[in-house]
Image (cartoon, rainbow, N blue to C red; front, side):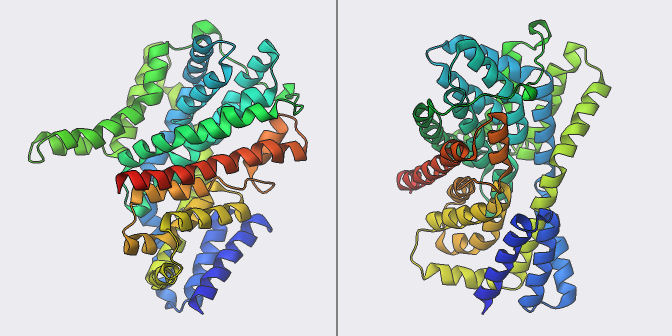
Length: 438
């Protein structure tokens, strides 16, 4: 009966978001309260569990997500992203233009949230299409595949960061594993798959063009690349330097402190403000405006994450999580595959990769603990599943369709298939990596 109640609650969550178009945060709160009542929690404990769940998940994530949003907005507005793209295009040339787009999308996708990266990069894609007279999907899909994979797999993006916290994974190690898995997923879903789409007609709409900054107003190449990649560099160093040091060394606690994701993101934001703002003559009021806009962009994401934490805590407080774990164990299915499958099904129903990943976390945590599954790989398995089956209930699906001026059929043939390819390749990468490190 308990499994039925949980299933009905998740089904209700999906219906509220996808059919009735109710705000995801409100849907999470309503379902959390109904789940608590249905699972027999005393009414006063339900409210406490909801508040505790929201506080626990946000307490570890607010700094990471907000500073990450501010950094991404600054990289975009300062012209650093435009500079990176320009350098990549010049370095790879016409013949290797797809690889230039992939690397540009990957580098820019690390600090930028998907929606910002998408809107920022589309004008670059269109300018290349018109300049070299190439098919739009052939040029654009590789870059968007890279953006999508970084969004689903790599911290400091919201869903992977939240999963790292909920699974108690290591942020730096997850990022390292994610990099290894991302590369083949992007190559298969991007350049290789895009070669099959050359004959799909696409005439990008001029109304979506975004004004580019003049060359003399762009920051330098080194500063642009350094700022975009600094979070990855610092998180990587903090994960691997302690492996080569005596654990009793006085340096280890300092590295641990400086390598904490919250400290890393705050440090990078301060440095980026100096390199991309103040040193280039920008006033603090200019930076404050950018940061304020960035916070508006991710406010809803924070609320959705908070709502998912509430549902997770209800499942934990009621003891149902452990019962679900015992039930799932009887299925004799690889936990990483099961987590991927659950995330993929929820993504298909809801349309949001973030909601799919965070909802799966509340279900799969107890099974992960009981089976002693590597939490870093679990983050990536859920992230890969959350990218699957994008269709008409996904905002990204419609953005792609309208920006590239495609028919519904061609959007399914290109965007929807690409998302499923990278999600499947991600799962394969996780399972192979498990064999290597176990």
